Amino acid sequence: MNEKARKNEERKPLQIDEKLIGLANAVSGIIREEEQKEYDNRRAQGQNNPFGY
Amino acid sequence: MIIEELKGKTILLDTNVIIEFAKYPSSFQGFFDDLINNRVVPAVDESIKCEFLRKSNTLEKRKKKEDFLDFLLGTDENRTELKITNEIFSDATHLSNLFNFLNDKNNSSITDCLLAALLKKYENNLYLATINNKDFSIKIFDRVLICNIEIGDEIRNIGIYKFSKPKYETIVDRFC
Image 1 (cartoon, each protein chain N blue to C red):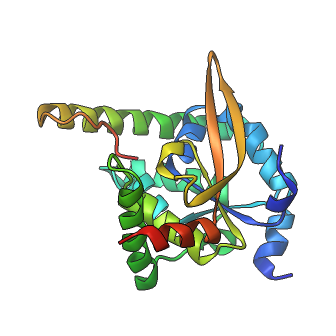
Image 2 (image 1 turned 90 degrees about the vertical axis):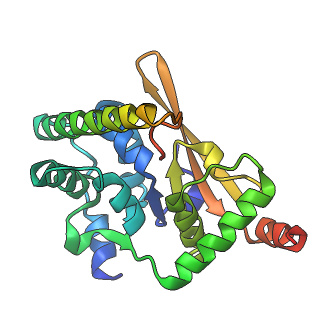
């Protein structure tokens, strides 16, 4: 077993703790802001496809 | 939830799965716990990472997103991150042609085509988890599992896909 596989074996289930929730909130806020900006830009250009992913 | 064939394999997390996890972490905990408990290795490639990070307009925002990926996938030294080579790009173009052959309304992104090419290259060991199920036609890929994630009143359907060589060869024979 290679080192990467061993480390994966040792990975613990995700802990939805305060640290993760705080990080996720920050990232989702950033993403929503980016989505809104892209949506506004596309609307301004007369396009309908909002996010592209 | 995880089927036997996925155990010990690598699964690419499409950008939409990462984003939905950021928005609703508690709802996705069971899904990720299932992966880890069954030794399924969550991974990204350079195109997913680019898609996730590219819109940040400050270093601080980019750093937050990188920290989030570290949390989800492990830090650089133990993260599985697939490389996009010229061969992958070339195959992505070919697969994109096939997608358009199969569907006049095909709207797959470059990232989707690159992921498709990676699935083709590592057909025996690599799977993809995506919420945009229409981007990966079951005329070329096998949908081996659907995971339902409850988010309040809504449900997200994560499709798990694998490249199918027999399906691909049938389409290639028809493509002209």
